[in-house]
Image (cartoon, rainbow, N blue to C red; front, top):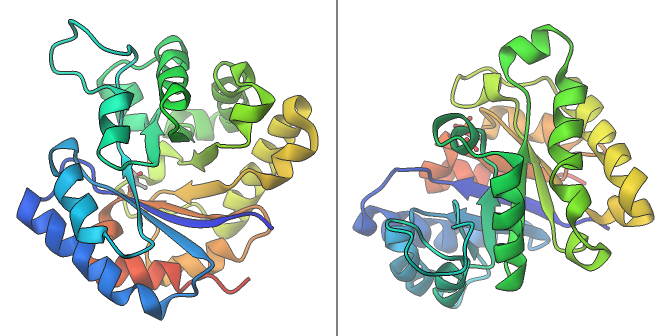
Length: 252
Ligand code: PEP
């Protein structure tokens, strides 16, 4: 049985006190969702500590939205994987399309970040996905294949056991446009096939999340698909009620 995951990417939103309130709201309502659904929240670096304290005693896990490619040293403004792990993070989002697009993250950088994540006991949530032009040119399969081959194929079999993939079509992120459940299933199944070509049966255990304007009204239909194991949620993760309602979308 693959893990079911609903992960919230808060991006650059909330002040620390607001983040604490949001986390408390998620923890307070958590009992309304089946215990087999794993909830993860990924606040900005600045509130990790306070949110970790607010989540104490709950089973909501903590993640960061990024980490540095280097272990430590003279890298002004960067935050090391060891630092976020020390604050209680279990996960780190890597390769989000906003990082690739606005901060020029390449597969080369991402390989280093993955290495840092594993060296510090973090599970990466590795994001892949095509932009609109690539989808319209029918290149989406090739794009995600390359994003996986260039980074995930460099993992050891042991590291691969601690990996979450998030498929996030860039055209669906924050736009209100969602991939249809069938589009999501088609590419999730393809991603699993690409993973299996390298890691064999272990690919059956890898959670593959859908991300891109996922909300309470569409989560159930998308999560019902065979190869969709949950969601990476942006905007709808900023309201505890909506975030929890997305978790309630699991029926399998
Ligand atoms: C995201 O950026 O990870 C995301 C899925 O955003 P949204 O849900 O707002 O589209």
